[in-house]
Length: 247
Ligand code: PGA
Image (cartoon, rainbow, N blue to C red; front, side):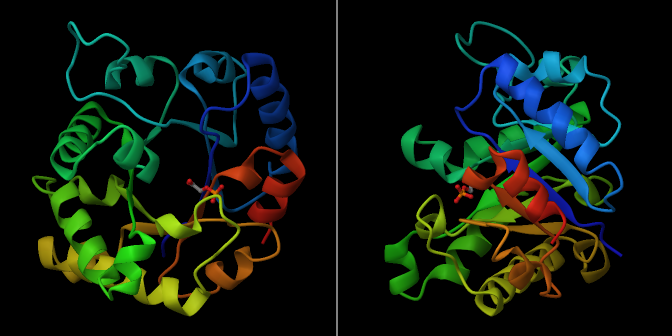
């Protein structure tokens, strides 16, 4: 059985004060949930959130660099994220791929470093609208999955979470329908089965992301292949995010 995992990706939102206020609330409101709840906050808030002594809400970062340390101005290492209380790190988000030109090779290095350090990567994959219209969705996500997971060992793979986020559905209010997302996620799981084996691939949790809201989350969570959600906009407000967690 795969434990559902619902993660909020706050992107570049919330000061330390705003972040702690919301996570305090969330910690109370979802204390009894059987779902694993993660908040991926900006770097600046992580240690303050960790200092709250959270029991339920887990912390994640939104990016990291693959080197251990060194002259990499502006970058953050896996050890720094662990030190700040993170258990998860989002890697290869489409905004990182598109705006900051991250490619599969770089993302793969980050995935390997995160795992080596003991962080659980949330590896994001997803197609553009153009690729979808050209019928390339499965080919694109399978390639991103295969390249992103290159070199991951059979012992490590159960620590990886994959997020399928069709780029055209992120922040647009457009969503994939449950069936369609389920089918793409099945293809991602098949790619993992080919890299490892069906049993290990069956342990990997794969989320759907892209305009998930309290009103549509159930459609996705009811699908057999979908194990959770990666939520942007609707994770910024406690009421909406709790509504999603209590799908
Ligand atoms: P959204 O973002 O829920 O605002 O569409 C999802 C994401 O980018 O992870």
